[in-house]
Image 1: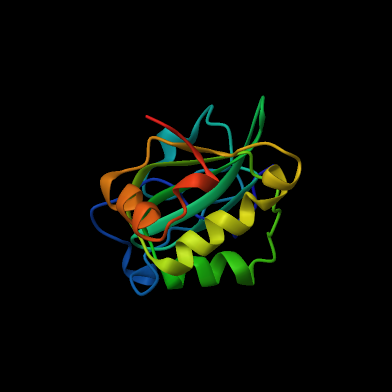
Image 2 (image 1 turned 45 degrees about the vertical axis):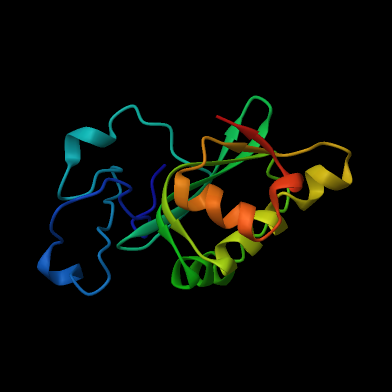
Length: 151
């Protein structure tokens, strides 16, 4: 069942005027946003999603365990919304950073925090297909040993 407060995860070139300030599109109770009703059909909904006009974080369940997905510009504002949502799971076994175009220090701190339980359990979390900006920050920050990077 879809919740009318959930946001559309599709990227649009323009935003509807009533939501132009936030860059989000609300999803109707049928699960379709007003901008792209046909594209939501059959899509598996993430367990948690935080979207901003230029960045998004969501947590999806995969066979191996929860995966934190980063898309767009994951900066302080996006991380602040994630933190405010109370959705700190700390159990991600992997981070898919292939669609992240930017990651700041606060975003990296979130990634390390959300994968901490996997490290405590003796598992090295995967950093999947990190974009060049993400890979560079992880390297500069000295966090490379915390992850098994999957190209």
